[in-house]
Image (tube, rainbow, N blue to C red; front, side, top):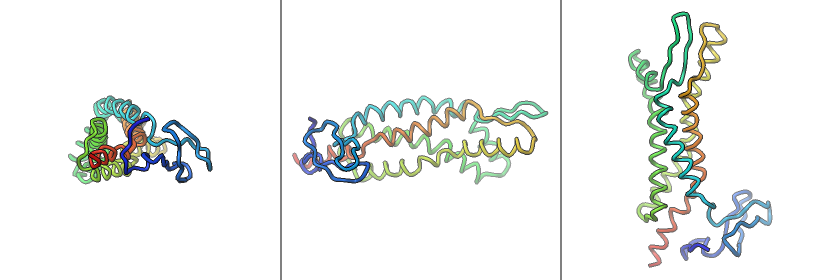
Amino acid sequence: MPHYPLNSAASRNLCLCHGCGLLVRISTADAVACPRCAAPLHLRRPAALQRCWALLLAAMISYLPANLLPIMETTALTGVQRDTIMSGVVYLWNNDSWPLALVVFTASVLVPMLKILALLLLLCSVQWRWSWAPRQRTRLYRMIEVIGPWSMLDIFVVALMVALVQWQSLASIKAGPGAIAFGAVVVLTMLAAMSFDPRMIWDPVEEHDEQ
């Protein structure tokens, strides 16, 4: 059974059910069922670090093709045009739509990269049991959870343009391979954040206070 700080609920074998919110006292760290809703109970999420590392590494691998491969392919009488995220940002900037270019760059390039870096920081801090700034790291984790779905801006734009153009029969637009990679980055980072257990941030802090 792993060691938990004396001031934590886990050290007293108290576990909060994620299904119904019931506080349950369990005898071991192994999986048991909630007496009210029968959901599995764990003092800490099992294999949380391993799953989060795996999902984050997969997101980091998908980040490069998401930005290098075309996210949208347009077929018209003049030929086929393939646009990446950055080429779309440059096009908007050159056509005096710099507010929209900043929004697309922030939501599609900057936010996914910052999410990956923030998750990497959280994972390293828990893996190496750092005790500095736990409150700030907890707030960082909450921010990652909040901004997660807003990274899908490019996918929404591509879907809307495909629907409008196909309806008006002006040209043929389809999502490119970059859209698949970009969607994979967003989904993988969201799953990584869901797999992370923020309670592990505080375990080294309380252990340090006990010494």
